[in-house]
Image (cartoon, rainbow, N blue to C red; front, side):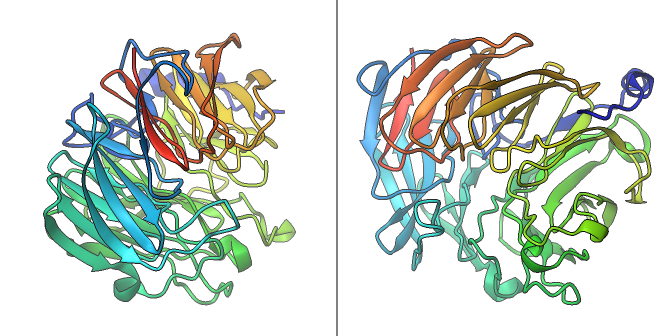
Length: 438
Protein backbone atom coordinates (compact mmCIF):
# COMPACT_ATOMS: atom_id res chain seq x y z
CA UNK A 1 0.00 0.00 0.00
CA UNK A 2 1.23 3.54 -0.65
CA UNK A 3 2.34 5.68 2.23
CA UNK A 4 1.37 9.22 1.07
CA UNK A 5 2.43 12.34 2.87
CA UNK A 6 0.18 15.36 3.04
CA UNK A 7 -1.42 16.45 -0.21
CA UNK A 8 -1.22 19.98 1.18
CA UNK A 9 2.59 20.03 1.12
CA UNK A 10 2.61 18.90 -2.49
CA UNK A 11 -0.06 21.48 -3.40
CA UNK A 12 1.85 24.28 -1.70
CA UNK A 13 4.98 23.21 -3.54
CA UNK A 14 3.12 23.43 -6.83
CA UNK A 15 1.76 26.88 -5.98
CA UNK A 16 5.28 28.05 -5.23
CA UNK A 17 6.41 26.81 -8.61
CA UNK A 18 8.27 23.74 -7.42
CA UNK A 19 8.36 21.55 -10.51
CA UNK A 20 10.71 19.17 -12.20
CA UNK A 21 11.50 19.61 -15.88
CA UNK A 22 14.01 17.36 -17.61
CA UNK A 23 16.45 19.20 -19.81
CA UNK A 24 18.11 18.41 -23.12
CA UNK A 25 19.93 21.14 -25.01
CA UNK A 26 20.59 21.67 -28.68
CA UNK A 27 18.18 19.23 -30.30
CA UNK A 28 14.95 19.87 -32.17
CA UNK A 29 11.79 18.52 -30.56
CA UNK A 30 11.10 16.47 -33.71
CA UNK A 31 14.33 14.54 -33.13
CA UNK A 32 15.03 11.83 -30.55
CA UNK A 33 18.58 12.76 -29.48
CA UNK A 34 19.13 10.28 -26.65
CA UNK A 35 17.71 7.28 -24.85
CA UNK A 36 14.77 9.00 -23.09
CA UNK A 37 14.02 11.42 -25.92
CA UNK A 38 14.12 15.18 -26.40
CA UNK A 39 13.06 16.06 -22.84
CA UNK A 40 14.66 13.11 -21.08
CA UNK A 41 11.23 11.88 -19.98
CA UNK A 42 10.35 9.22 -22.55
CA UNK A 43 7.56 11.48 -23.83
CA UNK A 44 7.41 12.49 -27.50
CA UNK A 45 5.89 15.77 -28.60
CA UNK A 46 4.25 14.24 -31.65
CA UNK A 47 0.83 13.59 -33.14
CA UNK A 48 -0.35 11.22 -35.81
CA UNK A 49 1.66 8.33 -34.41
CA UNK A 50 0.48 4.90 -35.63
CA UNK A 51 -1.44 2.68 -33.24
CA UNK A 52 -1.86 -0.54 -35.18
CA UNK A 53 0.58 -2.29 -37.49
CA UNK A 54 2.36 -5.61 -37.93
CA UNK A 55 5.50 -6.87 -39.56
CA UNK A 56 3.32 -7.84 -42.49
CA UNK A 57 1.59 -4.48 -42.87
CA UNK A 58 1.95 -0.83 -41.93
CA UNK A 59 5.76 -0.89 -41.91
CA UNK A 60 7.38 1.81 -44.06
CA UNK A 61 10.65 -0.10 -44.24
CA UNK A 62 12.66 -2.85 -42.58
CA UNK A 63 16.45 -2.99 -42.69
CA UNK A 64 18.32 -6.09 -41.45
CA UNK A 65 20.95 -5.47 -38.77
CA UNK A 66 24.26 -7.33 -38.43
CA UNK A 67 23.70 -8.37 -34.83
CA UNK A 68 21.66 -7.89 -31.65
CA UNK A 69 21.76 -5.17 -28.99
CA UNK A 70 19.47 -3.64 -26.42
CA UNK A 71 20.57 -0.07 -27.07
CA UNK A 72 18.02 2.45 -28.28
CA UNK A 73 18.44 4.26 -31.63
CA UNK A 74 18.61 8.04 -31.73
CA UNK A 75 17.33 10.30 -34.50
CA UNK A 76 18.67 13.63 -35.78
CA UNK A 77 17.49 15.17 -39.04
CA UNK A 78 17.46 12.52 -41.75
CA UNK A 79 19.59 9.98 -39.87
CA UNK A 80 18.94 7.18 -37.40
CA UNK A 81 22.01 6.19 -35.36
CA UNK A 82 22.40 2.95 -33.44
CA UNK A 83 25.07 0.81 -31.82
CA UNK A 84 25.27 -2.87 -32.61
CA UNK A 85 27.38 -5.98 -32.40
CA UNK A 86 28.64 -7.34 -35.72
CA UNK A 87 30.48 -10.54 -34.92
CA UNK A 88 33.45 -9.42 -32.82
CA UNK A 89 33.09 -5.77 -33.83
CA UNK A 90 31.13 -3.15 -31.90
CA UNK A 91 29.80 -0.60 -34.38
CA UNK A 92 28.03 2.71 -34.65
CA UNK A 93 25.79 2.78 -37.73
CA UNK A 94 23.83 5.54 -39.49
CA UNK A 95 20.67 4.83 -41.50
CA UNK A 96 18.53 7.11 -43.66
CA UNK A 97 15.14 7.91 -42.13
CA UNK A 98 13.51 7.92 -45.56
CA UNK A 99 14.24 4.40 -46.76
CA UNK A 100 16.40 2.73 -44.09
CA UNK A 101 19.52 2.62 -46.25
CA UNK A 102 22.84 2.27 -44.41
CA UNK A 103 24.73 5.53 -45.00
CA UNK A 104 27.86 4.78 -42.95
CA UNK A 105 29.24 2.64 -40.15
CA UNK A 106 32.29 2.86 -37.90
CA UNK A 107 33.96 0.27 -35.67
CA UNK A 108 34.08 1.77 -32.18
CA UNK A 109 35.73 -1.23 -30.53
CA UNK A 110 36.31 -4.97 -30.88
CA UNK A 111 35.84 -7.86 -28.50
CA UNK A 112 32.11 -8.28 -27.93
CA UNK A 113 30.80 -10.77 -25.36
CA UNK A 114 27.37 -12.05 -24.42
CA UNK A 115 25.92 -11.07 -21.04
CA UNK A 116 23.60 -13.50 -19.22
CA UNK A 117 22.91 -15.56 -22.32
CA UNK A 118 20.53 -13.63 -24.55
CA UNK A 119 20.11 -10.69 -22.16
CA UNK A 120 22.73 -8.39 -23.64
CA UNK A 121 26.18 -7.68 -24.97
CA UNK A 122 28.71 -4.84 -25.01
CA UNK A 123 26.56 -2.75 -27.37
CA UNK A 124 24.07 -1.97 -24.61
CA UNK A 125 24.65 1.79 -24.00
CA UNK A 126 22.68 3.99 -26.42
CA UNK A 127 24.30 6.71 -28.54
CA UNK A 128 23.58 10.43 -28.03
CA UNK A 129 23.56 13.28 -30.55
CA UNK A 130 23.15 17.05 -30.68
CA UNK A 131 22.42 17.02 -34.43
CA UNK A 132 26.01 17.93 -35.33
CA UNK A 133 27.93 15.08 -33.75
CA UNK A 134 27.00 11.64 -32.43
CA UNK A 135 28.73 9.86 -29.54
CA UNK A 136 28.81 6.09 -29.02
CA UNK A 137 29.92 4.41 -25.79
CA UNK A 138 30.43 0.65 -25.63
CA UNK A 139 30.34 -1.64 -22.63
CA UNK A 140 34.14 -1.92 -22.64
CA UNK A 141 34.47 1.82 -21.97
CA UNK A 142 35.47 2.84 -25.49
CA UNK A 143 33.78 6.14 -26.37
CA UNK A 144 33.98 7.69 -29.84
CA UNK A 145 32.59 10.93 -31.24
CA UNK A 146 31.82 11.40 -34.96
CA UNK A 147 30.28 14.13 -37.00
CA UNK A 148 26.90 13.13 -38.36
CA UNK A 149 28.57 12.45 -41.73
CA UNK A 150 30.75 9.80 -40.08
CA UNK A 151 34.04 11.71 -39.89
CA UNK A 152 35.87 11.14 -36.58
CA UNK A 153 36.22 13.87 -33.95
CA UNK A 154 37.73 12.24 -30.82
CA UNK A 155 37.91 9.05 -28.81
CA UNK A 156 38.57 8.12 -25.19
CA UNK A 157 38.84 4.91 -23.16
CA UNK A 158 36.95 5.34 -19.89
CA UNK A 159 38.58 2.30 -18.31
CA UNK A 160 42.05 3.62 -19.08
CA UNK A 161 41.12 7.06 -17.78
CA UNK A 162 39.11 6.09 -14.68
CA UNK A 163 40.07 2.51 -13.88
CA UNK A 164 38.91 -0.96 -14.88
CA UNK A 165 35.18 -1.68 -14.78
CA UNK A 166 34.21 -4.28 -12.20
CA UNK A 167 30.53 -5.02 -12.79
CA UNK A 168 28.96 -8.46 -12.85
CA UNK A 169 26.70 -8.23 -15.88
CA UNK A 170 28.55 -5.66 -17.98
CA UNK A 171 28.56 -1.88 -18.21
CA UNK A 172 25.26 -0.64 -19.68
CA UNK A 173 24.91 3.01 -18.65
CA UNK A 174 24.07 5.55 -21.37
CA UNK A 175 25.66 9.03 -21.07
CA UNK A 176 23.41 12.08 -20.95
CA UNK A 177 24.11 15.12 -23.14
CA UNK A 178 23.30 18.62 -21.88
CA UNK A 179 24.47 22.00 -23.17
CA UNK A 180 27.68 20.77 -24.78
CA UNK A 181 28.67 18.42 -21.96
CA UNK A 182 28.51 14.64 -21.62
CA UNK A 183 27.75 13.22 -18.17
CA UNK A 184 28.77 9.62 -17.45
CA UNK A 185 28.26 7.48 -14.36
CA UNK A 186 30.46 4.46 -13.66
CA UNK A 187 28.90 2.75 -10.63
CA UNK A 188 30.69 -0.53 -9.94
CA UNK A 189 33.15 -2.09 -7.52
CA UNK A 190 34.78 -5.19 -6.08
CA UNK A 191 32.20 -5.71 -3.33
CA UNK A 192 34.37 -4.16 -0.62
CA UNK A 193 32.66 -1.08 0.88
CA UNK A 194 36.02 0.25 2.10
CA UNK A 195 37.21 0.77 -1.49
CA UNK A 196 35.52 3.35 -3.68
CA UNK A 197 35.81 2.67 -7.39
CA UNK A 198 32.61 4.35 -8.59
CA UNK A 199 32.93 7.72 -10.32
CA UNK A 200 30.85 10.33 -12.08
CA UNK A 201 32.43 12.40 -14.86
CA UNK A 202 31.67 15.37 -17.08
CA UNK A 203 33.33 15.48 -20.52
CA UNK A 204 33.49 18.29 -23.04
CA UNK A 205 31.49 17.31 -26.13
CA UNK A 206 33.84 19.15 -28.49
CA UNK A 207 37.05 17.45 -27.32
CA UNK A 208 36.27 14.52 -25.02
CA UNK A 209 38.45 16.14 -22.37
CA UNK A 210 37.46 15.89 -18.72
CA UNK A 211 35.69 18.92 -17.29
CA UNK A 212 35.41 17.34 -13.84
CA UNK A 213 35.12 13.96 -12.18
CA UNK A 214 33.99 13.00 -8.71
CA UNK A 215 34.11 9.96 -6.48
CA UNK A 216 30.74 8.41 -5.81
CA UNK A 217 31.14 7.12 -2.28
CA UNK A 218 28.48 5.01 -0.56
CA UNK A 219 28.48 2.17 1.93
CA UNK A 220 27.15 -0.35 -0.59
CA UNK A 221 28.75 -3.80 -0.63
CA UNK A 222 28.79 -6.94 -2.74
CA UNK A 223 26.57 -6.92 -5.84
CA UNK A 224 24.82 -3.77 -4.62
CA UNK A 225 27.89 -1.76 -5.71
CA UNK A 226 26.92 -2.55 -9.30
CA UNK A 227 24.35 -0.34 -11.06
CA UNK A 228 22.99 -0.75 -14.60
CA UNK A 229 21.14 2.55 -14.59
CA UNK A 230 21.70 5.72 -16.63
CA UNK A 231 21.99 9.28 -15.30
CA UNK A 232 19.61 12.11 -16.11
CA UNK A 233 19.68 15.91 -15.89
CA UNK A 234 16.78 17.61 -14.14
CA UNK A 235 15.99 21.15 -13.09
CA UNK A 236 14.49 21.47 -9.63
CA UNK A 237 12.24 24.43 -8.80
CA UNK A 238 12.05 27.92 -10.23
CA UNK A 239 13.94 30.07 -7.76
CA UNK A 240 16.84 30.09 -5.33
CA UNK A 241 19.27 27.19 -4.99
CA UNK A 242 16.65 24.73 -6.21
CA UNK A 243 16.53 26.37 -9.64
CA UNK A 244 19.89 24.94 -10.76
CA UNK A 245 19.93 21.90 -13.00
CA UNK A 246 21.38 18.78 -11.37
CA UNK A 247 22.78 15.47 -12.48
CA UNK A 248 20.88 12.55 -10.93
CA UNK A 249 22.72 9.25 -10.51
CA UNK A 250 21.20 6.06 -9.15
CA UNK A 251 22.89 2.99 -7.73
CA UNK A 252 24.85 1.46 -4.84
CA UNK A 253 21.92 1.94 -2.42
CA UNK A 254 21.62 5.71 -3.06
CA UNK A 255 20.25 8.26 -5.47
CA UNK A 256 22.76 11.14 -5.55
CA UNK A 257 22.56 14.59 -7.18
CA UNK A 258 25.59 16.52 -8.45
CA UNK A 259 26.20 20.12 -9.43
CA UNK A 260 26.61 20.29 -13.21
CA UNK A 261 29.31 22.96 -13.08
CA UNK A 262 31.87 21.40 -10.76
CA UNK A 263 30.64 17.93 -9.78
CA UNK A 264 30.11 18.78 -6.13
CA UNK A 265 27.51 16.65 -4.39
CA UNK A 266 24.29 18.53 -3.70
CA UNK A 267 22.17 15.89 -1.97
CA UNK A 268 21.76 12.14 -1.52
CA UNK A 269 18.92 9.88 -0.48
CA UNK A 270 19.41 6.41 0.98
CA UNK A 271 17.33 4.06 3.06
CA UNK A 272 16.42 1.93 0.05
CA UNK A 273 18.51 -1.01 1.23
CA UNK A 274 18.66 -0.55 5.01
CA UNK A 275 21.86 -1.78 6.73
CA UNK A 276 19.90 -3.65 9.40
CA UNK A 277 18.24 -5.85 6.78
CA UNK A 278 20.77 -5.57 3.97
CA UNK A 279 19.98 -7.36 0.71
CA UNK A 280 23.35 -8.27 -0.89
CA UNK A 281 22.01 -8.54 -4.47
CA UNK A 282 19.72 -5.49 -4.46
CA UNK A 283 21.35 -3.92 -7.54
CA UNK A 284 19.53 -1.10 -9.35
CA UNK A 285 18.67 -1.53 -13.04
CA UNK A 286 15.72 0.79 -13.70
CA UNK A 287 16.69 4.48 -13.88
CA UNK A 288 14.82 7.32 -12.13
CA UNK A 289 12.22 9.39 -13.98
CA UNK A 290 11.06 12.97 -13.44
CA UNK A 291 7.89 14.95 -13.95
CA UNK A 292 4.88 16.58 -12.29
CA UNK A 293 6.85 17.84 -9.30
CA UNK A 294 8.51 14.57 -8.27
CA UNK A 295 11.50 12.42 -9.02
CA UNK A 296 10.36 8.79 -9.26
CA UNK A 297 13.06 6.50 -7.87
CA UNK A 298 12.72 2.73 -8.38
CA UNK A 299 14.75 0.17 -6.47
CA UNK A 300 15.10 -3.51 -7.43
CA UNK A 301 13.54 -6.96 -7.34
CA UNK A 302 9.98 -5.57 -7.15
CA UNK A 303 10.95 -3.52 -4.12
CA UNK A 304 9.53 -0.09 -3.25
CA UNK A 305 9.22 2.92 -5.54
CA UNK A 306 9.87 6.36 -4.01
CA UNK A 307 8.53 9.76 -5.07
CA UNK A 308 11.14 12.33 -4.05
CA UNK A 309 10.32 16.02 -3.78
CA UNK A 310 12.85 18.63 -4.93
CA UNK A 311 15.04 20.55 -2.54
CA UNK A 312 17.29 19.80 0.36
CA UNK A 313 21.05 19.53 0.75
CA UNK A 314 23.42 16.87 2.05
CA UNK A 315 22.04 13.53 3.19
CA UNK A 316 18.25 13.96 3.04
CA UNK A 317 17.49 10.38 4.10
CA UNK A 318 14.70 10.61 6.65
CA UNK A 319 14.40 14.38 6.16
CA UNK A 320 10.88 14.38 4.73
CA UNK A 321 11.88 14.58 1.07
CA UNK A 322 9.93 11.39 0.19
CA UNK A 323 6.40 12.36 -0.85
CA UNK A 324 5.16 8.79 -1.00
CA UNK A 325 6.31 5.20 -1.19
CA UNK A 326 4.71 2.39 -3.17
CA UNK A 327 5.77 -1.00 -1.83
CA UNK A 328 6.66 -3.98 -4.04
CA UNK A 329 6.09 -2.12 -7.31
CA UNK A 330 9.54 -1.49 -8.82
CA UNK A 331 9.57 -2.46 -12.51
CA UNK A 332 13.09 -3.92 -11.96
CA UNK A 333 14.29 -3.26 -15.54
CA UNK A 334 12.04 -0.78 -17.44
CA UNK A 335 12.38 2.85 -16.36
CA UNK A 336 9.20 4.57 -15.05
CA UNK A 337 7.41 7.28 -17.00
CA UNK A 338 5.64 10.37 -15.57
CA UNK A 339 3.07 12.36 -17.55
CA UNK A 340 -0.25 14.10 -17.01
CA UNK A 341 -0.31 13.63 -13.25
CA UNK A 342 0.30 9.89 -13.52
CA UNK A 343 3.26 7.58 -13.00
CA UNK A 344 3.44 4.53 -15.28
CA UNK A 345 5.37 1.52 -14.01
CA UNK A 346 5.87 -1.21 -16.61
CA UNK A 347 6.87 -4.31 -14.70
CA UNK A 348 9.37 -6.76 -16.12
CA UNK A 349 6.55 -9.34 -16.09
CA UNK A 350 4.23 -7.23 -18.28
CA UNK A 351 2.13 -5.70 -15.50
CA UNK A 352 1.29 -2.02 -15.93
CA UNK A 353 0.80 -0.12 -12.66
CA UNK A 354 -0.57 3.42 -13.00
CA UNK A 355 -0.19 5.67 -9.96
CA UNK A 356 -1.38 9.15 -9.03
CA UNK A 357 1.77 11.31 -9.06
CA UNK A 358 0.58 13.49 -6.16
CA UNK A 359 -0.84 10.98 -3.70
CA UNK A 360 0.86 7.73 -4.66
CA UNK A 361 -2.50 5.96 -4.85
CA UNK A 362 -2.69 3.13 -7.37
CA UNK A 363 -5.14 4.08 -10.14
CA UNK A 364 -5.07 0.63 -11.70
CA UNK A 365 -2.83 -2.41 -12.04
CA UNK A 366 -3.25 -4.59 -15.13
CA UNK A 367 -1.31 -7.50 -16.61
CA UNK A 368 -0.96 -6.44 -20.24
CA UNK A 369 0.93 -9.50 -21.49
CA UNK A 370 2.68 -12.40 -19.79
CA UNK A 371 6.20 -11.86 -21.11
CA UNK A 372 9.53 -10.39 -20.06
CA UNK A 373 9.93 -6.66 -20.55
CA UNK A 374 13.39 -5.15 -20.92
CA UNK A 375 12.51 -2.03 -22.93
CA UNK A 376 11.19 1.07 -21.13
CA UNK A 377 7.77 2.49 -22.01
CA UNK A 378 7.39 5.68 -24.02
CA UNK A 379 4.40 7.97 -24.47
CA UNK A 380 3.35 9.67 -27.71
CA UNK A 381 0.09 11.05 -29.07
CA UNK A 382 -1.76 10.14 -25.87
CA UNK A 383 -0.64 6.53 -26.09
CA UNK A 384 1.71 4.41 -24.03
CA UNK A 385 3.93 1.97 -25.93
CA UNK A 386 5.10 -1.13 -24.03
CA UNK A 387 7.48 -3.54 -25.78
CA UNK A 388 7.78 -7.15 -24.68
CA UNK A 389 10.90 -9.26 -25.06
CA UNK A 390 9.36 -11.62 -27.60
CA UNK A 391 8.52 -8.68 -29.87
CA UNK A 392 4.97 -7.65 -29.00
CA UNK A 393 4.36 -3.88 -28.91
CA UNK A 394 1.26 -3.15 -26.85
CA UNK A 395 -0.39 0.26 -27.15
CA UNK A 396 -2.36 1.46 -24.11
CA UNK A 397 -4.36 4.66 -23.94
CA UNK A 398 -2.75 7.11 -21.51
CA UNK A 399 -4.97 8.13 -18.60
CA UNK A 400 -6.79 6.82 -15.58
CA UNK A 401 -8.86 4.19 -17.36
CA UNK A 402 -7.10 1.15 -18.75
CA UNK A 403 -7.73 0.57 -22.46
CA UNK A 404 -5.59 -1.66 -24.65
CA UNK A 405 -5.72 -0.09 -28.12
CA UNK A 406 -3.59 -2.57 -30.06
CA UNK A 407 -1.12 -5.44 -29.82
CA UNK A 408 1.42 -5.33 -32.63
CA UNK A 409 3.34 -8.54 -33.24
CA UNK A 410 6.84 -8.05 -34.70
CA UNK A 411 7.88 -11.70 -34.53
CA UNK A 412 11.45 -10.81 -33.46
CA UNK A 413 12.92 -10.38 -29.95
CA UNK A 414 13.22 -6.79 -28.67
CA UNK A 415 15.10 -5.31 -25.72
CA UNK A 416 15.40 -1.80 -27.17
CA UNK A 417 13.07 1.03 -26.17
CA UNK A 418 10.94 2.40 -29.07
CA UNK A 419 11.69 5.82 -30.55
CA UNK A 420 9.26 8.39 -31.97
CA UNK A 421 10.50 11.16 -34.26
CA UNK A 422 8.64 13.10 -36.92
CA UNK A 423 5.51 10.97 -36.57
CA UNK A 424 7.49 7.77 -37.17
CA UNK A 425 8.02 4.96 -34.70
CA UNK A 426 11.46 3.33 -34.96
CA UNK A 427 11.74 -0.17 -33.54
CA UNK A 428 15.03 -1.93 -33.13
CA UNK A 429 14.69 -5.72 -32.85
CA UNK A 430 17.55 -8.18 -32.50
CA UNK A 431 17.29 -8.73 -36.26
CA UNK A 432 16.30 -5.46 -37.92
CA UNK A 433 15.49 -1.76 -37.72
CA UNK A 434 11.88 -0.84 -38.53
CA UNK A 435 10.17 2.42 -39.42
CA UNK A 436 6.41 2.50 -38.80
CA UNK A 437 4.44 5.52 -39.97
CA UNK A 438 0.96 6.39 -41.20
